[in-house]
Length: 215
Image (cartoon, rainbow, N blue to C red; front, side, top):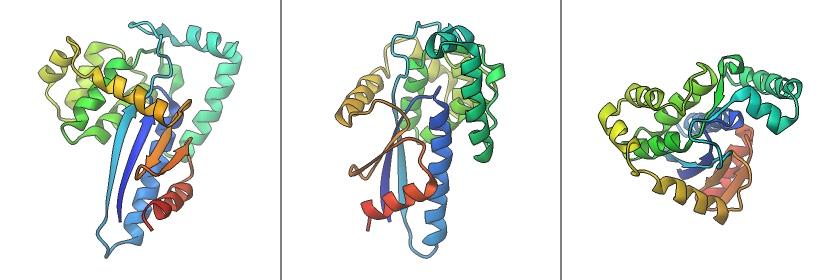
């Protein structure tokens, strides 16, 4: 079984983190079902900016959430729902630790860099973990460089890239892909360039899509 899964997501989207876990469960299930049948599942991550007009320095999360949902009480209610779902997937969301909602352009540039160095999934995972469970500001340059080093990439390479315009093409390419597939929310999954799934689908839904894409 040969599968290509393109994932359009943003690193500040909690449902994208949940969707990643559910996709992983589906891929592991494929492993279990095809023990004697070699297969390859390639996952590629593409950027989507939930807040394309976000200031470079980000916005205080409480201010941003009140502006988006009308009240802090409503924001906390939605957070509680996500926390409950996250726990069922082994993700411990710690929204109380998050002080800022960041601009994610630089984080996506690093995901692009990681893709060129065969550690893209590790970079995505590290960014999700830093933001959602450790409460780190992943719009901060030093935080991003620390995450880069954590996944085994060179700190200086990351610093050099972030100090220039290298990697901005991944933002443009991601925008074009989103337009091509009419993506207006994430996560969004494209399997073998043929089947599209929107939202953090159940593992069984991914497995059905895998079978349709590669009968």
